[in-house]
Image (cartoon, rainbow, N blue to C red; front, side, top):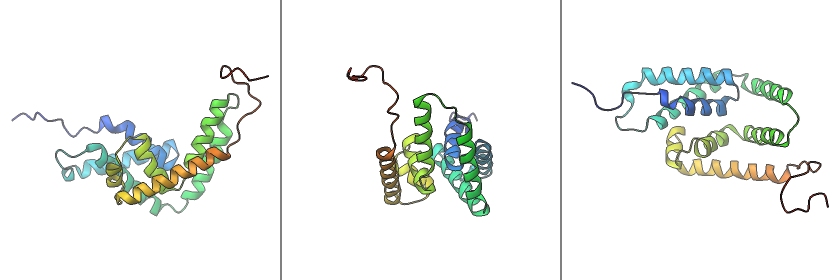
Length: 179
């Protein structure tokens, strides 16, 4: 008998898994390891996936749980995060304002608490609904909404405190530049 439904295909979800892993661990190599671990777990628990369920949410939930397990086992996580931040600062190429601004926003995002970063990433970047993100993180929807609200408030505060490059002249605008 031939199956007409799509097979258990995780290949289409790799980009979302990689983005989420990168958001969680802040390091490309560790992110790839986390994706590998999550896919291995998903394959091993393939029979627990509900037919007709949301594969992406299920995989992101597995990814989240794999990450939590890694955090619990890795006492040096904070030290590695500090080392990754130092390397990122050293590798930033100076020059254009948007590159500097992007780094500032990225740093602000990575300075959010892990719980806030996870929640905001799933909703804002992966475009999951609040319900799907709450299910992926295995938390109540109210907790998710609270984490997202606090994350957004911190990012707004960052935005208000971030100095602008006043010495750069903007082209276009209202014509008052340089007058």
